[in-house]
Image (cartoon, rainbow, N blue to C red):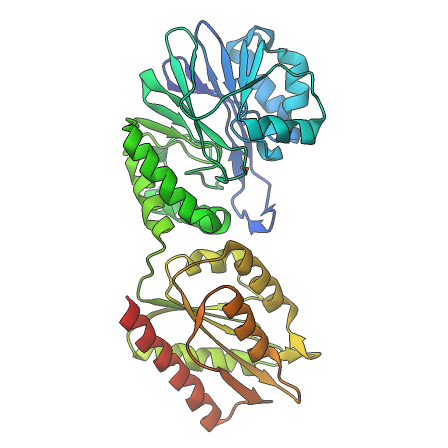
Length: 398
Ligand code: FEO
């Protein structure tokens, strides 16, 4: 989309909307995303972040609506990942800024990506301030949210936070502000974004929120680098991050499975019966139709993760192996788990899932249920019992 939007007087959104992207390093972006960049018109004209490389012309087009790009004085790189810096080399040639501000790790990452030692780097750290004329920008390093180089830029006079990857959503829209879209869909996108990008960094997010609280920053507007800008009650997303990063589970279970000839699916449904009849909210997710990133969104507030796979060639079905690898990287905390699966003759899948759960520090509450070939009544009763047992553990813990 090539339409600039004024966020506050003299502060413009000049980014790009990507309506087509459907995969974001393993995360399903069914509704696209945006790459947000912001231009402040002041005595020193300053561009905060750029966009993914194929969207360079969108950014340029937007800039040209308000300023001759060669008149931009400063460029701030809050985050080096290529969805925000991919067009930087070309923009540096066009803008030729007097200074390029980034964190120390940002400078290193920029050199490692673009191999340009000659750019006019100005390394900043938490607490450093930059005067643009009428406005002052304060930098806050936010290491690992989402990369070691990440930082926030806070515009003091406008109480406006340019928050890089934090508080974002992958959602392509023509609207730019949170009060212009459906609130519950927005929060669902924000939760999916948190679960799939930031869960691993939850302890750091807790510390960051604490230090931002101690700094006493007033927040009128939060501008993430993806998705909608939070101008109506921006604290709602800060409060959601506080909740999500504490990883306090609710009375909820997710039963996730893949199946070969329907036996493991039948087991999954029997386990879900045991959970549901015990009063635990339960999601049943089939990895052949539910994307790993949608499963992780449900895992965010679940207490129990019950995983099932048949045994294929002495190991797991590939989609379950994929999911375990993905969830293991995100390392959700405060969960309990169990495994189940049908098998023909060797039956390693339950042990392999249990091992993976233990590696993730998820408490395995039961040795699991293995049933040969097609489950019959007695086998399914064991599955219902596993569901009931998981339900008791969920209730005790929530
Ligand atoms: Fe949106 Fe970590 O980049």
